Amino acid sequence: DGHPLQVMLGKVTEAVGSTVETIRIGNMDQDTVNVLLSDALHMLPRLTEPLTRIVYYKTDGNGMFVVQFFQSLCDEGLLTFSLMSRRWEWDIEGINSRNIADDVVGLLTTKMLKLDTATLWGLK
Image (cartoon, rainbow, N blue to C red; front, side, top):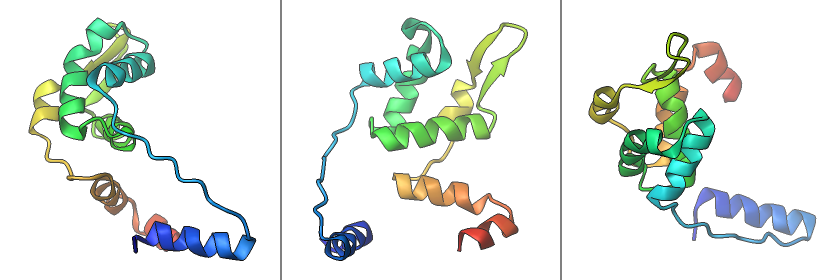
């Protein structure tokens, strides 16, 4: 379909003489996202439901987007571990007001642009 990843996989297949199997994975439903978040935060699913609702709304359950968005919440201090309460806490209003990219590539690009110059140069 002309996507750079498809083109690269085609070249690898030709060079190696093997086949690449494509596995299509659909988006997760809200319950599955909640299981993922509650497991990652070591909290009961009923306690992570408010966070799950917003993560699901912002990512539409796209697995890679959920993981990247979730990581960005930690990076930006919107999801933090409280030593006082000994559990994870999040800023629902901050997460709600956060402008996010419309897709995974946009989110990753935004994260990469926050890297220091030396790291960006190394990635080139």
